[in-house]
Length: 269
Length: 152
Ligand SMILES: Cc1cc2nc3c(=O)[nH]c(=O)nc-3n(C[C@H](O)[C@H](O)[C@H](O)COP(=O)(O)OP(=O)(O)OC[C@H]3O[C@@H](n4cnc5c(N)ncnc54)[C@H](O)[C@@H]3O)c2cc1C
Picture 1 (cartoon, rainbow over the protein chains, first blue to last red):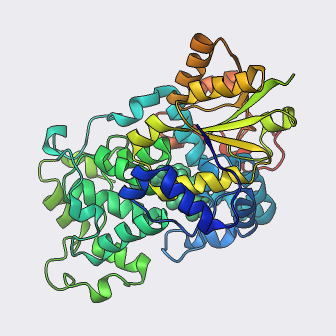
Picture 2: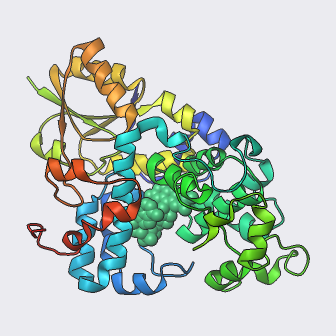
């Protein structure tokens, strides 16, 4: 069936998409402000700041590039992005080019294993068996109704914008897998529904990395870490801050709580 | 007679992509893969993003349905016997490509995209993908130099 290609404005396009894809519109009708297209991709590429990126990328307000959706759908190539970063940043572009390389790496793994990206690459190092993890993503997580300001904020942002900062993705994935003990595949599928850059390889293999199915140990974090890289904006008015924040504690304490049966050796850094 | 039909897919939505450059006058068709949309439950914002990327490609034709069947219908309509498209590592891409050849007797020619880093096929085969660091260490110096013909 042929679809329309002439629209007067974005509103008209959106109305047409709602009619043309009624299932998607019923499930998740949000539209992101991030525009698609080569012009927008070139504008984003013109904005990259390789040097500031290296210094601030882990911070939620850091100078990250927002190139992912354009790279994911081949609107831009990694080769173009790499050239632009080196021309702009020279030696200072090392960090950014290394992040681009992660995408190239995951794509190469995908070329090798195909749909194997949905299966554990290696056995888990968490001390839990695969059967210990729940199959489905609970509604409170997807709906942003856990009561945890941080996680609810990330879930809302994911749904509204189709984007999350890398650190927020890591925290959210760790919460889903390690705190709620849910199979990483359920979280991965949820991200793919919403992320504009949703890429089966980058996404699933990153979830596997957090889970420890593609890493020597699980990724987890504590409140100090989240607070530091968010300037405390979530913690500030979270009802759980003084009362049962599940992320509070030292790494050793959290390890004992989350992975009581894990092999100690796996956690030595 | 057109002969070539350019198949646009979600791994290369660049108006200056290599398949479009090589066949500037050819009809170009993108198909929303209905089975895939259902399987991945893609949200409307993802579809809108893709649609906006497509609308910047001159003379694009957009369809939805079964990808191989829709491409075959377009090829009949424009009297094309060859399909040219950009490479993709997705297993779904390989399946559709095989279906076009097997079920519709259409030749599919796959054009390479510019790689992140130029590698010979022996170098590519020697890459160790067990961990990122093993992949990256041997490539790093070359990736960080603007001159691609850096010798290692
Ligand atoms: C659980 C989880 C799921 C993820 N899912 C995806 C996904 O579906 N698609 C996706 O492109 N990335 C994914 N990532 C990787 C990373 O979070 C995003 O690429 C990045 O946050 C996108 O924002 P940006 O373009 O502003 O990134 P920047 O930090 O500005 O990075 C520049 C570019 O480098 C690439 N990149 C950076 N980090 C990574 C990485 N760890 N893996 C792969 N590529 C990277 C991206 O193409 C990105 O656009 C995921 C990470 C995690 C932890």
